[in-house]
Length: 265
Image (cartoon, rainbow, N blue to C red; front, side, top):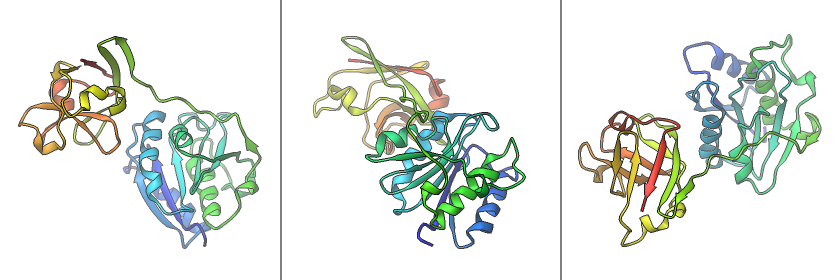
């Protein structure tokens, strides 16, 4: 089996039967597959959160891994199921933009509209394509079926640009919180290159206004922050995060996903 790893990224949670049913379908078709859960805690219906999640994880897997991404509020509609062939990996997902950040990272890619229904589970539900379409397609990809067997290549696949910070005036940059992680860290869409003066050896004076508070210090690790202090840090995703040491910036600042983040130099 040349492509024996299949990863799962969904907004299904773990309280229902959905994830288990998908794994059963995969193992019935590809019993030697190794199934890895990346996350089933993507925010419900949140395509951007799904795009962030898979973009931060997929590249660490071996070449040939099949990544199944199911965040699919349009299930049962005319939205297309697709197979993406990237530089080293395969992806199976709905064509709703959930792979947008993968598209941005891949040098070479081919996207195909999955129309070969003989690979689907029958009868096919209108509400659970994760089980009936994406799981069997991922399994057959893992077994070595060539992507061109699933359908024709398309170029009009759905993709969106992740929100970028914008200058308000010559001293102020406005971004937003993209995600709140499990620890209450506020992950913004601001990269170090967006405000290089803030990260110089002798940084310019600054403040970051967010929620009901403000931040005036950048730390190099979480433990460097004083108890109860909100500070900035460049996290593992590469973005500016607002955090507190062993606390929740989300609770301390009353800010969450979509909150404005104003960096004033």
